[in-house]
Length: 350
Image (cartoon, rainbow, N blue to C red; front, side):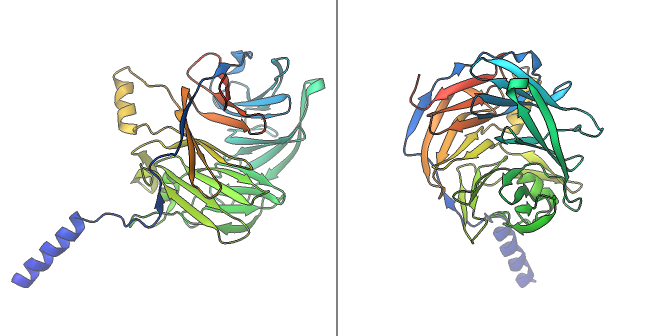
């Protein structure tokens, strides 16, 4: 009898004191911290309901509107600050999108957009002089994949995240067929990877083909990953908030803990990520109390291609998206909390 009691107590103590083994590198702070102040860019914002993503190339800047009435993307001229065109009509018909989850601006002839509901990738051609946009092609994504919620474009096709929990990403060819799968969820917990975990570990992606680096940032918690698609490089860095927290209900993962990174961009030099860090329970309580805090993050983290912390910028706005022009020494950002959402920050101050 004593044997069973002792065994039970031992198991109870082990269970109560279990904590995930730290197997990945941590960062706790940055060697340099600076403050940045934005200047507003005056655009006609009457088109926007929920401006969410921004990308610029040359004189053209594109702004994605998630909750729009008619079109998901709006193009502007930066030199004249005028509206050029609105495109990607909202709808379920041919050439329309039920939802535009994300887009990538590679050139005027290669503006890519992803609809996870229809499992389609659309390519558009913008002609600024004519203020016209043409839908060039529609690529069906392999229906065996679960809904793809992010997209990066490579010279060989596309990269999309995996939502089964088995991999971290899939590579697709130009026909939307899977050509490879790789990576894994770098958890330290005892949980078994599944669909709910993949949802809890939902990432933002960006890819630099010149240096073959896929940068992955978790939307919950604080985990940064760096992959090479051509070799076995897999770098994982845990921040102070650790791995994503989520609650599994009926096979789905629901956010818990904190909201982590909200956008990512990898350039030839660095990885830039916006970090929010707000607590979901506190956000809900503030909402119920009528004290809803601003959305987005006011911290911009900078890492090198090996995931080492380089610098942290404290911003005077809470932003959801950024587009870095490293050569020019500035970046554009979107602040959903004000009427003129487009901002410009200089890394060297005003």
